[in-house]
Length: 447
Ligand code: NAD
Ligand code: UGA
Image (cartoon, rainbow, N blue to C red; front, side):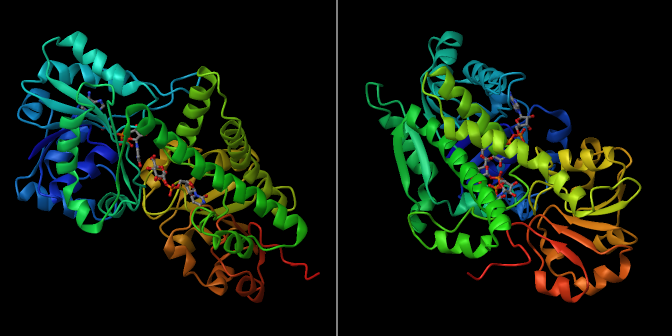
């Protein structure tokens, strides 16, 4: 079987490599010359654990190739996946569809025989039908179906998520004369290897599949905002947010995951997709008020975290040195998009602090987004050296293993603000640190 993937970014590249690993011949089309030449040279332009070896072995096996010739890639492909970006449109938060529409037009021009055109990008409801319209306008003779196959992988664990998904959603045109049967049979073949691990393949209509993606991301974002509010309440009332999350999560109807409090969610998707769903609801005359509120809460939370750090430093950080551990929006990625570190570090810098930062892989992506005076250090202890306060922003595993006494030894001050709750409060106290985390107040009430 042969397929084409339009877009070699996070989703396109991971999906293409995993499909190739399934034994499918995959031709990736990438229109950024820098990204393409890196890929053709076997260099991976993003940091994603395991991706380099997966790409290399499948290139070597002749199942995975990269190019910019869409006609060559589409020729003989039974499915053509669109995995281009859908960033927020300036001004109103709706998804910017220009890249998807351009890709649809290029695919139409390149089609030589029947293919199913599959949207993997996260797109507003109605996009698959719009793509069908663009293809028909461009090539009235084209023989094709459309399908929607939103992707649920997470950065940092993308390969595992793709290979062992909780579910695969495939939307088909249920209004087509054969109710999308031809497309269904191709999509079943594409995902056949997953039947061995009994991953559910859920077939729906096009609109349902498209909306399920936004609903899933928004629900997870809402869950995080909920636990963040509970953490703040725990701080006020002397309760422990981790015990609370466990107590809630053991109820299978709630579930344990995504109940870890922090400085607010970031990344390339939750912030953009919650905004886009808010916009979709408003345009449809059916506002999604919980999601709209989640957007506001999360924006305010990220900014508010700087205030929390300043308060921990007795209200004044002018002339002080603050060590920051972790810059990326989550561990195991170099992605800085919408990372809470961006607004937090800008505020701290404006308030007069000197910032000594360390992130295991994020320095290059962080540099253009952070205050220019930021000092990038060689490791976590180097960042802590001489600092008046230390702040944890991303929960990289190597930070968890740091000894509080070793931190104390190199710091000038003794304030630690742990916005990911990675350290043991008791161990910090014993080392003589003034330690603050989220939703774990020093005095838990036992009433
Ligand atoms: P990305 O920006 O990393 O990658 C998109 C790539 O497509 C870029 O390399 C770009 O150069 C290329 N491209 C754009 N137009 C093209 C064209 N006409 N021909 C060939 N190449 C073209 O974006 P991403 O993070 O991979 O996200 C893609 C989509 O997947 C978005 O809709 C996003 O919401 C969704 N998504 C992303 C993730 C994630 O973890 N990043 C997870 C699930 C879903
Ligand atoms: C998220 C979804 O989890 C994926 O299913 C989806 O495919 C993807 O968005 C997408 O559409 O792009 P991702 O953004 O890579 O994946 O990372 P997550 O692990 O979901 O984390 C997102 C943010 O939420 C991070 O800033 C993280 O620190 C934060 N988070 C997550 C918390 O604060 N608490 C939690 O309990 C979980």
